[in-house]
Length: 227
Ligand SMILES: *Cc1c(COP(=O)(O)O)cnc(C)c1O
Image 1 (tube, rainbow, N blue to C red):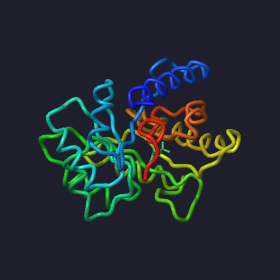
Image 2: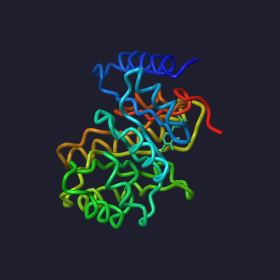
Image 3: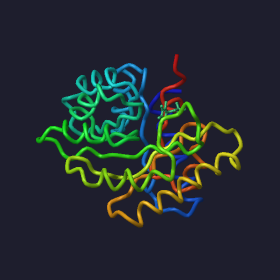
Image 4: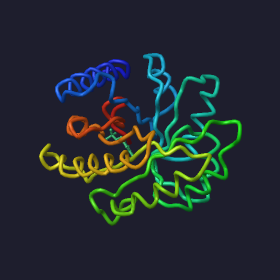
């Protein structure tokens, strides 16, 4: 299957699951995760009409952003773990960061966001399955970090992101996803402008949409498996 066919299939699936879940049409956005894939693959997705891409590695992401700098319609999301010595590259190049999990990183991104760019869109990453190896904050730390981020003028807090522990059964998948949905509602109750709940990958997309995801991050099902 070609990348453009894969994209069409995924968009169709998103639409039909959204409809079945009685959610508004177009309420779930597709982020194409292009990590490790060459610019030729991204070009194919662009030619098929896609605009939003997610990258995990700072250097690789910045090289791709620079390669496509002539296309101002593209929207680049940083979705990998971020060390504080790499914040400047993210602040200067990306439109979104989905993995903020501590104030120090947020402050650096705020200070380094160039004046000529719009505010950097931020999602707080939640370690929803409480995995030791995973980034993200504990659910009970969410509101405090959100309050601190909301005071930083060059950042725009948009919502939450999670990478739940992989589960094959939808029932099992939904446990963590429903917790995220609850947290998202709590956040929305305190802050206006919270509109993004980023969850759902190739293997749990359907469950994630049923649990209120507004952005699914799909790599393998679009670009094929990674080396
Ligand atoms: C790699 C990755 C994805 C995409 O995963 P697939 O299983 O290939 O769809 C989504 N989100 C994050 C944070 C990732 O690192």
